[in-house]
Image (cartoon, rainbow, N blue to C red; front, top):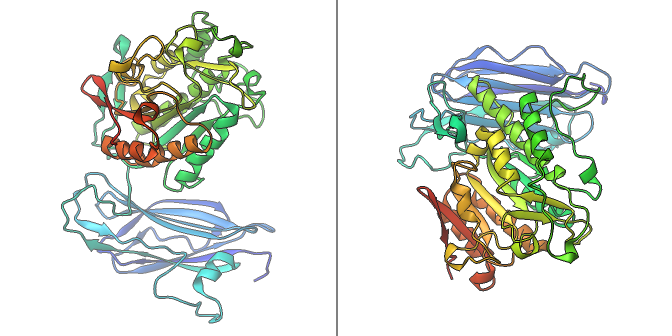
Length: 480
């Protein structure tokens, strides 16, 4: 084969007791001949071949098999690009509530056990060949082992599947009688929204989140990050449907026309414009960027839920976590307790603002289904976690507002700061600790442990976690 050509010969060994039934084949580059079999019986093996179909083109694809009547799925991927490293993946998507006692045996096709060299070239290891070679042979092995443990929460290296068609969502009623849906059984990695108002701090905090989840969301976590640039305030874009035809190459609309009209009405409201009381913060104040960034993210999350309603596979898990980063100090914002603001180039100028009870409350009303999905909230901002017994006019308790139905009716935890929050590298470390603690489930004990790890000073100036108990939010003092 020419060095300008690429190919992949894949073999799947079904070592389980279940027949594998072809569910979907996606070929990104190249052609299949032969294609993966429609059914692979238990104990059997099958081979398919992907060849290049253009000059200096690689091959890439993915195949999904249903695992007997377990409800689980086996997903196999291959990528042999013309330029760049090769990649082969195998993952098992376990059906929630399947009741099977079998445990998936993880297998990494990039590092197959029991094999040290290619049969046709003893000088090259399998790992080297899979990573670098042009004409490739790769093996996938699918197997179960009996698992008699009673701990259903034990990690079995399998990604939870979407709820089965019989799973009914739990519903909550938002103001005005609108019903929103929260699927309790939709566990596993959850989508995260980051909204940072400080130009100098936001990019590093977002990078710490991306580093925690593996840059590309390799754990199944999708990060929707909004970080301002010095000139971003005048270039915000509402990704909405319009009467005009979209421009070539423009991103697809996310908001419906009705949602977009509601957001535009919010942008036009005058009672949500904040005047700073501190003259050091004086200057042009814009709120469009913050509102539109979160509106686009909430709308995208709503579209994912609509895909679930249709029993379609969503692009990402629905939104579960939200980070809002910036400055917060009521005496500097005319006594308003709910104002988060940020500046540019390392300053604290009042360049961007976001009001938590007004703008955020209105966005939650416009996108009630997305708001109902949020279970974990983090404020990387000062005085956002003040306990009620210590609250006063200068440092009000804002956390209790976030269990109200007009905001996040299913919020389980809130991370804030009793007094001054950290900045720089310390803030990034705190964001990373929070992300890892809230990754798989809303377990406030785990989050509390992250708070304890974050605190290096007296607790009056440290991180604090609130948890929901019934219809109230209760502050949990960090352990000393």
